[in-house]
Image (cartoon, rainbow, N blue to C red; front, side, top):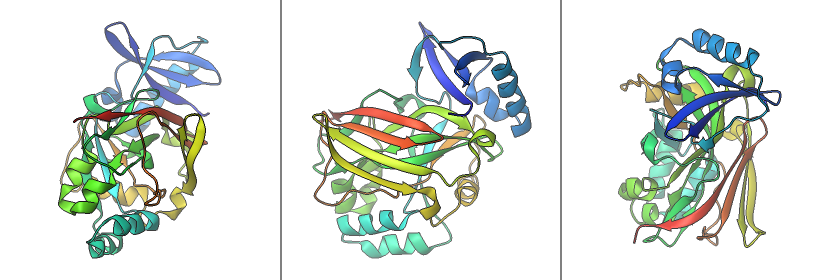
Length: 281
């Protein structure tokens, strides 16, 4: 895995560490501090910390790779996502229109304190009967809107609620434990521009209940296009994470269940693993 940034907790404090070639180093400041800087400055800070790395263990426990960053998400950026939304909804023409339009679908997915990290539980709503993970590449954007790095994301979604009425999308997408990020942030200069492979597996009682793969090469929009639209009329002084949509949508015969384990993998970005619990009533 290339150089990566990890958010860790030691007692009552959180900190950031850099990992490269099997060794760990301390990173001064927060992710918000880095994302407030020009990209070349933040790169210099990270590479300086990597050169000083000398520990074989990071210490602390893993936290989601955000501190002050909101998480936004883009929808219907893959043909499979468009088709899946049409399958679940009686309003299929809406998804054709947004897939083909110049302006993308963008929505606020999570405040930073609601995000869960690698190993933490993601949730499915107790008042929904059809729920799926959405495996996505997340863009970590700095305050200028430049792509600072990448992480993996799980945009958990209630297909039954959104399918009933597209105006219910906030309830289908935004609830406790509905957003997972991790395991780390890989800087853009270390990961390269992509495309990135994405694999999704759902394990049930230790057996594979669902598996599929896709690639960001199948996206109908570019990363830069999505980032540009997000910053069109919004500012993010501490940076922001933008999930770029999913190309893996299970069919109508599959729903995630409490007790399942979800694995999202992309070679350069690692693996994000989360057990599933029910939330709400």
